[in-house]
View 1 (cartoon, helix red, strand yellow):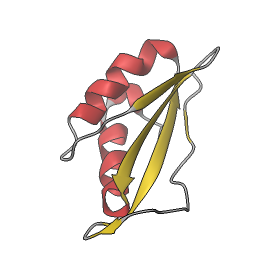
View 2 (view 1 turned 30 degrees about the vertical axis):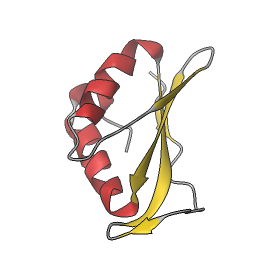
View 3 (view 1 turned 45 degrees about the horizontal axis):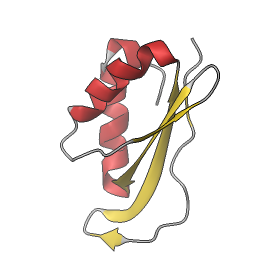
View 4 (view 1 turned 120 degrees about the horizontal axis):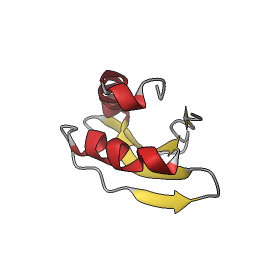
Length: 86
Protein backbone atom coordinates (compact mmCIF):
# COMPACT_ATOMS: atom_id res chain seq x y z
CA UNK A 1 0.00 0.00 0.00
CA UNK A 2 2.19 2.83 -1.27
CA UNK A 3 1.23 6.22 0.12
CA UNK A 4 3.37 9.30 0.45
CA UNK A 5 3.26 13.01 0.98
CA UNK A 6 5.28 15.13 -1.36
CA UNK A 7 4.93 18.08 1.02
CA UNK A 8 4.56 21.80 0.74
CA UNK A 9 6.21 23.66 -2.08
CA UNK A 10 8.68 26.32 -0.85
CA UNK A 11 7.38 29.02 -3.19
CA UNK A 12 4.51 31.01 -1.70
CA UNK A 13 2.57 33.49 -3.79
CA UNK A 14 0.13 34.65 -1.11
CA UNK A 15 0.60 35.42 2.55
CA UNK A 16 -2.21 35.81 5.07
CA UNK A 17 -2.83 35.60 8.80
CA UNK A 18 -2.21 31.83 8.61
CA UNK A 19 1.16 32.23 6.85
CA UNK A 20 2.10 31.50 3.27
CA UNK A 21 -0.28 29.76 0.90
CA UNK A 22 1.43 26.54 -0.21
CA UNK A 23 0.50 23.54 -2.30
CA UNK A 24 0.12 20.17 -0.56
CA UNK A 25 0.35 16.91 -2.51
CA UNK A 26 -0.76 13.51 -1.28
CA UNK A 27 -0.35 10.37 -3.39
CA UNK A 28 -2.65 7.40 -2.72
CA UNK A 29 -3.68 4.19 -4.40
CA UNK A 30 -6.85 4.67 -6.45
CA UNK A 31 -8.91 2.50 -4.09
CA UNK A 32 -8.12 4.90 -1.20
CA UNK A 33 -9.04 8.08 -3.08
CA UNK A 34 -12.63 8.34 -1.87
CA UNK A 35 -11.60 7.87 1.77
CA UNK A 36 -8.88 10.50 1.45
CA UNK A 37 -11.31 12.99 -0.09
CA UNK A 38 -13.79 12.31 2.73
CA UNK A 39 -11.03 12.96 5.25
CA UNK A 40 -10.04 16.22 3.56
CA UNK A 41 -13.67 17.37 3.40
CA UNK A 42 -13.83 17.17 7.21
CA UNK A 43 -11.07 19.78 7.63
CA UNK A 44 -11.94 23.18 9.13
CA UNK A 45 -11.15 24.97 5.89
CA UNK A 46 -12.33 24.44 2.31
CA UNK A 47 -10.24 22.10 0.17
CA UNK A 48 -10.47 22.39 -3.60
CA UNK A 49 -8.31 19.49 -4.79
CA UNK A 50 -6.84 18.83 -8.20
CA UNK A 51 -6.58 15.12 -9.03
CA UNK A 52 -3.81 13.72 -11.20
CA UNK A 53 -4.28 10.10 -12.18
CA UNK A 54 -1.11 8.10 -12.69
CA UNK A 55 -0.72 4.41 -13.44
CA UNK A 56 -0.64 3.07 -9.86
CA UNK A 57 -1.65 6.14 -7.85
CA UNK A 58 -3.70 9.30 -7.72
CA UNK A 59 -2.04 12.54 -6.65
CA UNK A 60 -4.32 14.91 -4.77
CA UNK A 61 -3.02 18.48 -4.76
CA UNK A 62 -4.63 21.40 -2.95
CA UNK A 63 -3.69 24.82 -1.56
CA UNK A 64 -3.46 25.38 2.18
CA UNK A 65 -1.96 28.01 4.43
CA UNK A 66 1.13 26.96 6.41
CA UNK A 67 -0.75 27.12 9.71
CA UNK A 68 -3.17 24.47 8.40
CA UNK A 69 -0.55 21.87 7.43
CA UNK A 70 -0.46 20.35 10.92
CA UNK A 71 -4.26 20.14 10.97
CA UNK A 72 -4.16 18.21 7.68
CA UNK A 73 -1.58 15.84 9.09
CA UNK A 74 -3.49 15.20 12.31
CA UNK A 75 -6.73 14.54 10.44
CA UNK A 76 -5.07 12.13 8.03
CA UNK A 77 -3.21 10.38 10.85
CA UNK A 78 -6.48 9.95 12.79
CA UNK A 79 -8.20 8.29 9.84
CA UNK A 80 -7.46 4.56 9.88
CA UNK A 81 -7.20 4.27 6.08
CA UNK A 82 -4.81 7.17 5.64
CA UNK A 83 -2.39 6.45 8.50
CA UNK A 84 1.18 6.88 7.42
CA UNK A 85 0.46 9.76 5.06
CA UNK A 86 1.95 12.30 7.44
